[in-house]
Length: 533
Image 1 (cartoon, rainbow, N blue to C red):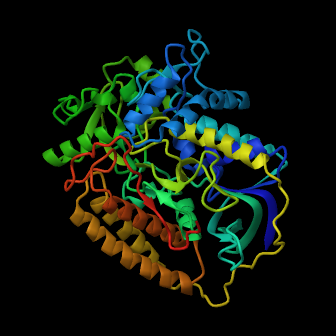
Image 2 (spheres, rainbow, N blue to C red):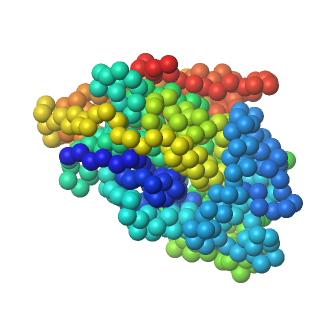
Image 3 (tube, rainbow, N blue to C red):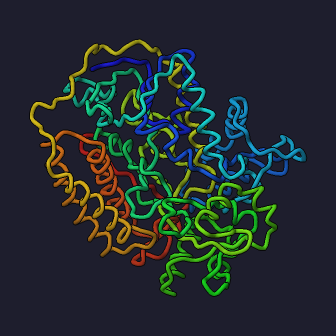
């Protein structure tokens, strides 16, 4: 089965949906999503979106804060480009109907909060469920637009390129896509293909991300011949609720921004011993401090306390988190809540330019799956959705400026299942999945060593060979595709971490605890064997 659209968007979060809506008046859009659109990371984002909206703030200060949080590895030109396009991105969402929390005393009249690494209040938000407000608003409009065809419950298998077909050139022509309900692999042909698949934090045993965050775009782009960069920098959010049934429940950084304290089990505050900014230090510093204290004391968690604020303040600012904590038996207004770090954000990804273009013609990457140079060695809070919006606009404008004539190939090869069978050993996938996430947590986590990385590399090499054999013999399933992608991305993370002989930002190694002093610190760029210059 083959279908054609002007634009194929793989991923339905803030990046994919905003690009679809920006192009839909002039282009036909096919947008595929692994589950429902509301199952991606955008929906679960709590804190908000950073942008300079207050007259007391400035672009220069937002740029400086972002570069400092990124341990001086960010690209200043890219950071400035994103920051200066921030207010327009927020206005675009307001025009679309996103219900941001208002404050009549502000101009524009929206409440701004502050989070770690920011020198000003510049986080516009919709209570403590900003991602849900953004995702549901854009989702509704995408469902109603006649030029946008949504394909939920579909997962991309691999990109189709001229190189893979043995043709001259290096253009992306479409993708093979598995319909999860029918089990059939379809061909989606398109002039422009956009990867907006999010990050890869599901490679770790503990993560704040939904189950869909399996690095699909990064892995597919790498296999197709794209360079990737800075995969050693995976952010661990300092505060996820610690409870056996609270799967992936993130506790927003805005609680610390509004005066919450981090405490040890005995009630003692500890962040001032690690950074003068205390609880408002960037995420890498806070996560390492918590990890250090948990290991030092042998405790399973630390505590986040905002009970010194009034109940009215807490329920007004954090209604979702307050209610969710009550469901698990914790009253934030009366007591501290137990928290632990968990894998949260992939700072590296597919290398792109300011238009979102990758190394392959006609292939774009936007959002968390991309490496733009914005985040450096650590993403500052609430810059993530901002990046999605700004680069969706940039990619859209670049696509609009090009001729949308169809490529010269009317029919692409169908997916070949002639030599495969249904698997009778799904336990292999399940076992490998658990093994991968466990050794990545143990050996490539918040604190690393050469020996840990070498152990991880040996294990990932073995898994990759097993999965390659399995993939070649059995029909593809959603679990197999995700495991294949995660294993590929894990290999990239390990290789990147082994190449960096210093500690910087989110990459902290006991063997090289110092940070190189350099005016232009280097990115870690990995080049695939099939890369075309």
